[in-house]
Image (tube, rainbow, N blue to C red):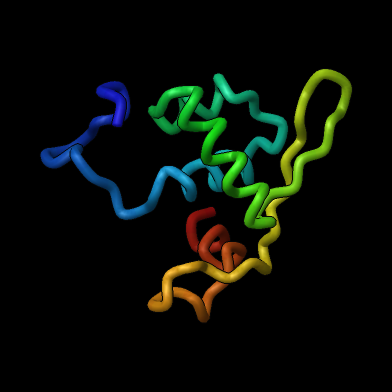
Length: 98
């Protein structure tokens, strides 16, 4: 985790993953650039690229080109992956956080 993203007394961990941080960021700004996501989440651009590729491969995200920019749409019906959370969808969690 980047030092610019550290807050509070125990900044070494957060409740949500970087994957979900990317999803939250894209839910707010679907045409964010990799650099924007990197700055907002506090991870490297390479890590953002890897996460985006994984989310696209798992059909969590769909990407569409508009001019020179990518626009991402989120599959809000996609179920969370961990067995403890699998009864819930990405959209449900995004609603709670918005």
